[in-house]
Length: 355
Image (cartoon, rainbow, N blue to C red; front, side, top):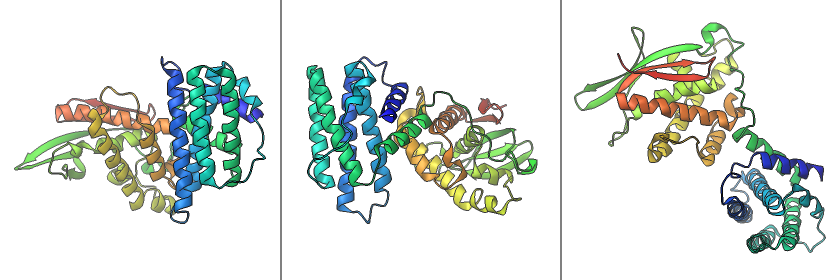
């Protein structure tokens, strides 16, 4: 199975846990966790097939994560990826439904983890063979090929943990200059207090742009500075329907792009992303001192942008946009304003204190 060997190499490259002292234990915990996720998707399929349209895609993803942990565990425990080549190619066991197979998979996975804990290497490979057989049977039952599962997992890991990070081409490069996001742009965030109302306005030169924003909540949390997140999207992703609306640089020369990529629905989606990330960030000191964004949030964002031009951007690029946006947001928040400059050529976002 050449594809499995290739997958093992890619899984080794994308293993972010390898430098941890408890690497093997983390792989065991991850395998058990992903087994539970596979079981959950199969249960949902049995319980609410018609009401769960994303079932097959989610099962593919969870099986891919399970396969990743299985291959990494075998490689680390046995010292070589070559061992996985001895796994069986097919199953001739009695036919079972998906839930029964899922239960068998859980039992076999628990047995494998116990073998690893005991250091019984010969039993490890035999136990892994049972798991492999069950995976094949589950895949066959649902019309899935494990090679496709592995390929999809590789695409996901490369999107999240790319070996070489190259920014994607800007979406508006082929459009007239007046319809492009400004390649360099500076705007001043000014906080004003009017009675009990605290608002932020944006000023470009001598002109106010956009709307005056408040937190729109009883408990003040400085969301009124949130336009900086849209500027981060523009600077790092080269995408922001909100900024295009504010700066009046929608791509009017192409009616399809104007309506479907720069229109109201795209604006709503971007605002939803900003609000969803903010809700998570509030509980994490707005990402202060952190170098990464949790995987589940990045996957949620990818689902939200499905169907829009930005859907093909890698997750690492979204992570950079979020972390850079919050770095500058913290500076704005601490100084109650300031000048924010983006450079699309450098994919950078910078803050300077208010004059």
